[in-house]
Length: 225
Image (cartoon, rainbow, N blue to C red; front, side, top):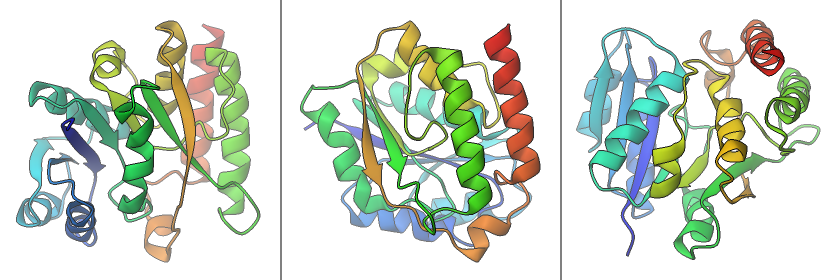
């Protein structure tokens, strides 16, 4: 069996991070790394109490930086496959099995989780932002994907060693796709379910409209430069 590590970047997620870790473990995945990205609450303690390995950034560096830290740690700990997912309960741990299967079967090196983008399944502003981001990601990387901003992904160990990202914020997701193209990594998209709750959509640090505009600007700047 290949060693599967789950990496969860988290910022001020004390309310749900413990439950997320427990739900992942219930699916049979016990190698769980939570990267506390400079939280001001008890995210680290809640994650550790639930059984996760906790790495803490002293300051808030951004989702991309936290994810990168977690992937690097997983590789050092001997991971054959690394899965990244959010810590706010949006992603279903049950989908991990389907996301890792193409890598387990040595068919692909990267699996991109793709949310069902249809009316009612995703907040309207997220649909608009996602379509814009998909277009810019196409210009940025040369790869057309259905969901360029999903954080639910799986990587082979080989892919992890090549994804030398520099983005610290939400544009990290698109940079990964550019690196997939640059290194000619095999990839496939896999459908995932997403639960949008009042909690997950109301957090100030999440991808709201203003954050979305900043992310698109950064992506566009990188694409042009």
